[in-house]
Amino acid sequence: MADAMFKIVFFGDGGVGKTTLITRFLTGVFKSDSVITIGVDFHVKKVDIDGKRVSLQIWDFAGEDRFRFLMPSYVVGASGGIFMFDITRYTSLKNFNDWIEIFKTGYKTVNHQMPVLMVGSKLDLEYKRAVSREDALELAKKNNLFGYIECSAKDGQNVEEIFEEIARLMMMKAGLL
Image (cartoon, rainbow, N blue to C red):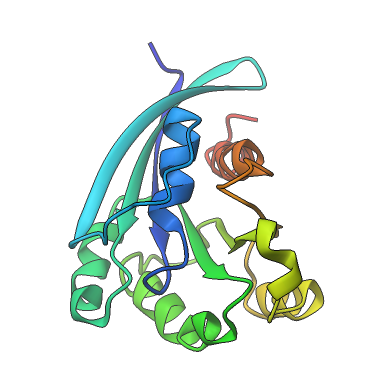
């Protein structure tokens, strides 16, 4: 039995690696042949955080424009969010403000700031980097996000850390840590 259950919504442009990251976290395997998410996919995984059993409901939201209007309804009831972009594609940050606004529309609550992490994907392709760590960190800070982490679903770098960090932030917000 879990000590807590939290809903996390992943969002960002299509092709940035949301589904691949989630698959790597759930299975420990890198799948290079992921198909595009239609609407939203849902997964659950239990993790141990500081001696507590936490059930994470992971909502993988499609990145294509045609699905964005659905997002606010999926954010309802969320405890945290992860905005993801591709460090090798500067254009994957182009819609950042739109994504954040759409996300916030779903959780309009007075004096409530839900933990949102910014995640830069495809760190294994560092040599193709188009977005500097400094620029991404500055954008995250300027928008009051709760942190910035870079990862690689391909080699597993920082995959577990992303989920541990968002779980800790949600637990702190809920008064469980």
